[in-house]
Amino acid sequence: MSKSTFAIIAAAGAASGAAITAAFFSRPERKATPVATSVSLPPSPASGAHPPVPASTIAKELVQAPVNPSGLFQYGFPGPINDLRPASSLTSAYDRRLRNPAWVAEHITPASLAQNQADRRHSVFVEDESVPEKFRAKLKDYFRSGYDRGHQVPAADAKWSQEAMDSTFLLTNMCPQVGDGFNRDYWAHFEDFCRRLTRNFPSVRIVTGPLYLPKREPDGKWRVSYEVIGNPPNVAVPTHFYKVIFAEDGKTGGNVALGAFVLPNAPIANSKPLTDFEVPVEAVERASGLEFASNLPAERKKRLCKEVSCSIIVREYADRQKNLAGTPPPKLPSPAR
Image (cartoon, rainbow, N blue to C red; front, side):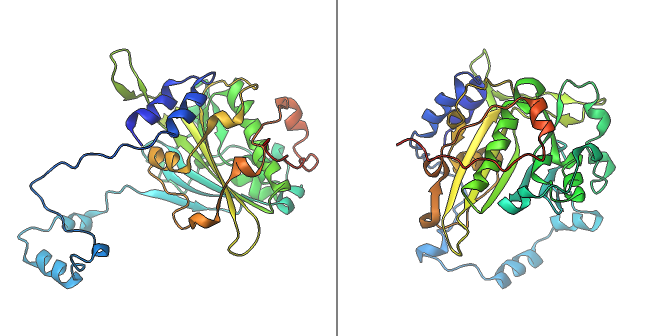
């Protein structure tokens, strides 16, 4: 996928950009023309032209080298290090440079959402002390920043125990999000859509995280630009957020309905169709540098929005907070044919 593909996402506003994005995502890739270099790499062993280089040969070459760059490791490994944090309600990988999670994974089922053993009023936002202090996002970074502490895994998905809900309030599960029109509105409706999937599928896995996408500047060049909040500046404000959804049919080796969505960190009208933000999983992978379904065979993959109707139900923020326990969400209808 070309650079312009993702730039279109960043440049497009919530009112019209998603449709343009979908159109560009559907374009075939252009093959890059190989550029000759002074270094010749052998073909892949799969081609049969050259066998793999034995490890002993590589070790011998390293021993004979007059220098040892890896000797630096005696003083410590520079990184990058992604702080992996497994918890009862989520698993996350933290980006120390941006002070945001790179991704946060969760698992919801009809049974997990039916339980109501937690109260959001008893949970508080806290810094994650498992992250070294100098790399940690801090509560003071968000103070008067103009941004919400936006859950990546929502508290409403972890009602089955107070400990599970408390885990969602660590700052390693947060990113700066626009409040009105996004975190408290369209994004919350999107989270509700994910929960409603459990009426159609017995098991739903979701990966959520931030993106920092380029947009075209007046001089015609593409640049990545994002705000940094805190004093001193500490936490990056993402330009976009993604969700990759795995809706499982519950059978061993069964089908998985995949859906990927990219939304701008900006106010979005509730009238905007969710399908306008649907993108190929590969698009999110290329933008984030992550892989989500590399071990899922193609024959088991289904397109989520062909299996169910991908649409939001608009509910006022105050009503959602009052009804956090709520009743089971209605079953999603099949998409219009």
